[in-house]
Image (cartoon, rainbow, N blue to C red; front, side):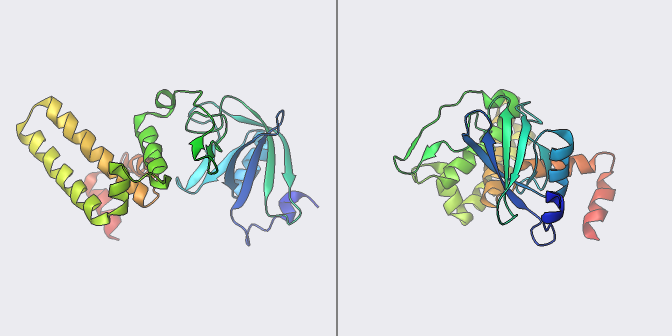
Length: 224
């Protein structure tokens, strides 16, 4: 019986996937696959996953070209966890590190340095969002981002404040101030997304959905 038949996708619509470098056996990352991602992986020879934050299928390396070529696909004894043996092209982690496992809880320090400039690959918005997530999960308390994430009322008031300041700048101030206030609003909006673990990719998907649709039509679609 093939593994696709052994896997009960009704019971386990998302299976954890451990990704291992085929040459060094280093664990590179943990991701998830649904049935579609699994089939794409097998048929294409390149790793595809289902992103819980983006809520969509994604090919590893679709933005960075740091793809994972499949060497082998192994199934555990309970038939509910997949191990991928891959040839990693470039780095595995979106932070620009070789592996996603780069923080030692024992020594409380980073054990892998960045090898790639992620700003150039993913763009500053995605890089900033993931930096905010790092602050969210950090034990460090002395940061403005951490303070916003721990105080929802403060976060909401700052988003409202920055939106008003942008409106005022658009109405009365210089281009430089409009840009400055827009950057402030964008940052605080990304903190709001991070507080809900919503990837900005989902906002991009929504904007893409609206292309070719009038504003009135889009508003009516939300009211149904």
